[in-house]
Length: 473
Image (cartoon, rainbow, N blue to C red; front, side, top):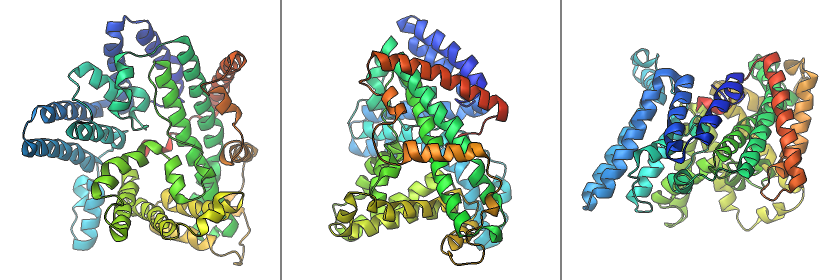
């Protein structure tokens, strides 16, 4: 079940809101827990058992860590619980990838044993939530939660369950104890949800046919212009798809009186790859900073150790997105450019702080990374890179591989680039969902919500829906 589908918008969500918002305060969390488990079961069937297993491991693991007096025992308990959580993730997400590579080096047929493993939706997200909770309890930054219903409700809360944001227990525990349900929160949340729905259905899905057609075309038909068009349009599609989902998740949570932190902050307005990662998928980049980069030593042990730690973090970041060499190389690509920026700190980056010159460096680099993210193989990614580096080759500016491009796709592309990607004043959508909007904007937000739902439903019914891209992670 996806947020943009009719069965969610007009069946599950109204029932969930009615049950949760009109239930007695004592029944709010149990109702939300049952609804969230039903949502995941509807989406993933029997894999709900994996979700429940992670809840059990995180809950009892944290309790055990909290009760242990000896440091050695605490280390053993948190280590065992973490190994269980990571082990489940590795089994479902990485075992086939490992087996395939073992086969390539040894000539065995190990991959045939694991070929039928299906990845549970959202497992990368809720595994990281469980790990963050365990580690925070281990570090004594928060106490272990005794209320199993409260913890389980947080962990399985359906808005963030399938594709994030990665929500830390310490950031939302107070809201789950006493949700701030109000007309203002409901209105703001509904508008934010509708805004995310528009970003997904109108812009992301509208642009999608362009990169889909190019990436599906034979390699030898893709020239310079087509390759850059594929990278740029896929980058825009991915941003609107995932940030749209994040907006919808944040809006849904707000409707239930729960506040999530922002997950995107206009990443294409960045001046560097370093800044890009402060703005893109913030909940993931901050997770890796706090639970991997800093524990590895961060930047405290000299330049070489810092570079090593950064490369480890971005290698793991790439593999978190998918079990393939393309994702690994995508992560390393970003890590290497961050190293370059660190080496050059204090010189040329200052030139890029103002004006359009920053885009002469940042945008081409980030667009060069997207073929690795989207390609089905390193061979395909290298072929696109070769085309992107060949402006004088025969047929370099032919767009045959992208034709025919529908008018709706071009409109979506222009709208996306002009309204959201480029820097400038607050967009209409940002004004409607801001914390300081006045009464007139509340009315405008209500109208916007209704129109967005109607338009998106018409588009969804006419062309079906496209799954959110981050569901595969």
